[in-house]
Length: 287
Image (cartoon, rainbow, N blue to C red; front, side, top):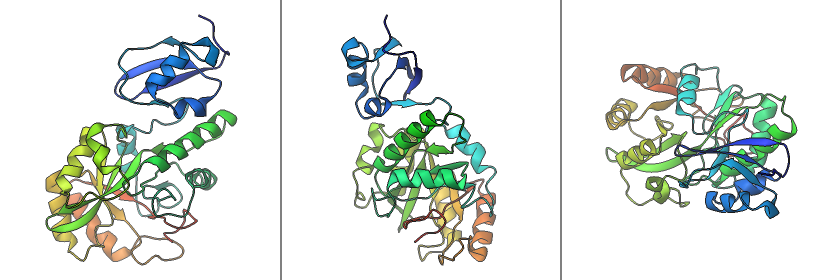
């Protein structure tokens, strides 16, 4: 088989399908469906070819290369196990928004800021959308190809979804999930699903291979001593322990709320996570 060029890129197909391919236009491949990719890959006129491919096409391709897998829940657990009050915003940041929902940053600019800050890992958690994650992932791939020796952050898939928990509407953060999982599709249409129960969202994210965190648990006008146990009973994996409730500059987690939430997370065996909940132009603050 003739290859279009000698640059072999490894592609990982979500849901256990792997192909090894060659590309002279990576961004184009990411923008098309897997079936369309295979049609082009097997047609030399498109400048793509594959060494092997399976017949099971259920999701889009994600290049892993030297970057972290955006669906790697195990890597996320290891990162969360190290999170403390000093992790955010310059080491990890797991709560970020772009213009794809209600933020001000273009996804490409966001990932460039993350690189400049030297972040080890992050997730874009737009409300009920994953398009911002997709755009940031493509930009990260472009940078990785242009600067193969540069240290780059691990970008996980992410989303923020509304759900009702014990009579209170809360926000649930999903991470490291397969965005193409059909069980998630109703929650990724750009707006909240009316009166959806938190347990439905949690189960859907878990079915998609993801992890679930209760966002800013002290912001709902309901005691965290009620909400966190209720969320734990439904199977959440963590709580956003380190959160700045009064938007201080410079950003720092609120001490009183952090102490109480951390005690509860330890009691219920939950991960402590952190995030600036950025909606403005800088990853170093919320607004």
